[in-house]
Length: 288
Image (cartoon, rainbow, N blue to C red; front, side, top):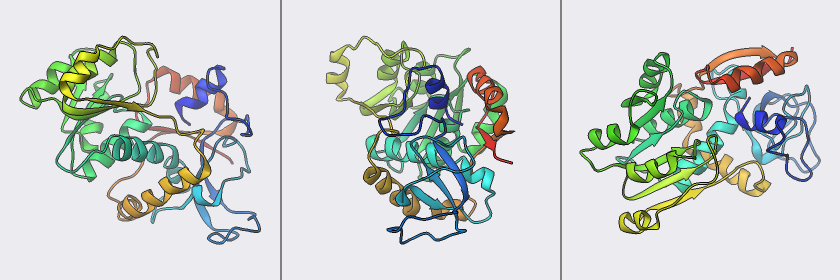
């Protein structure tokens, strides 16, 4: 499950033209049929896949290039929690955000599916990782995943904490899914030539921008969505993940954090749980 599933149900994130109107953007399972032009995969291969929709089902079609092998030693449930977050983090943090070894990143919502993935990937690639969470229970989990500093945003001002931890320099990259009044504060927390990457707007899409801040600090403000991108682009991202991240998954250096597994028939309960923001990591629906 992912936040876009909830947004689709609420009528604010419709599927792209031609996509299934059944929710679900990532799956794992055994291949039961292949198209005539498929060359890599064969019947009974076990894969996880990024899909444009239709994941809440027993059978779902997926483009060949958007499928990836199940990492060694990983369960099907764990593998189902990989594609959406790993594709999203790779393209936004390491491509758009251009995060490099030795740089620093602030990840908002460190306890969610995107957050727990981003913490692990950024730390594994040699970055200093800061993150914000809403619950004290999430602090130790995020630290174990690789976060150097976990900020309780309800009690602490993330701008002040980041400034203190970086000797007033700020961070190189911020991954944000909050929007709203976080926007101006994010610009304050960025270092010179920092990059703000926006991937959602949970607290509002309309913001006020002081262009002078962008100019003086030579900032880059960017963002993206993943679902509507063409198959060729998603295939390219999959290839980058298989080359750069899958070896670490195969070696057990990182893995998805699974909060709860529910049967597909309890999808409505899963949506309530996700919208409560009381989870740490991924919520997975299982077809029995």
